[in-house]
Length: 173
Image 1 (tube, rainbow, N blue to C red):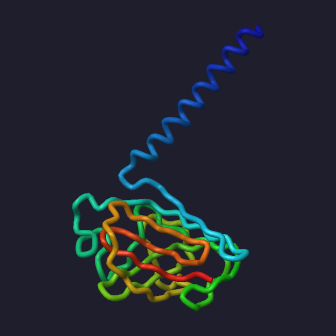
Image 2 (image 1 turned 180 degrees about the horizontal axis):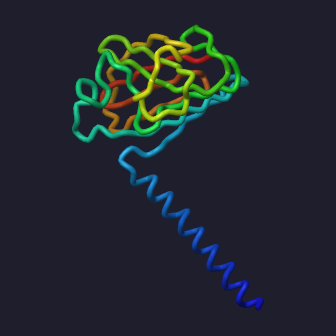
Image 3 (image 1 turned 120 degrees about the horizontal axis):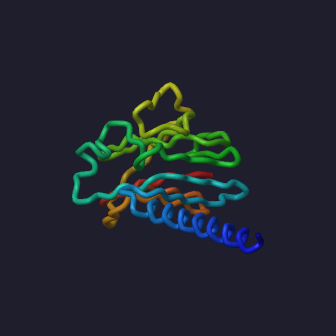
């Protein structure tokens, strides 16, 4: 009986381990894999969860991926989430502690960074401007080529969105 129980235990353990390994491999092989970045700004924890689409030779800004002048989910798959543990300012404007959907409206000379009450949603398909809690402006700059969309949060409060040959930064304090 003991041997049978041990055999069952090792079989289940191996199955779980294999399933976890396959799930991790599947995540890495997705066309737009999940990613996250976090920073500690003073006593505040900032966490951003997003998915990383790739350029793949496409026209990112004028096509259907992230066209100028239209609300973009700021990544791929589920809406990007922006979470702060305490009240902060973003570009000098107050944002209460909480978890938000992070959207943007890309533009050639100016971007609008949007913090929306509805953090859990798929893309921007059901985005509702009435649920915005904050909109701020940021200036895009030329950047080295970044194949995968990447967000970088730093402990000094700089948050930078980078994709293709564009970088857009905003300040969290």
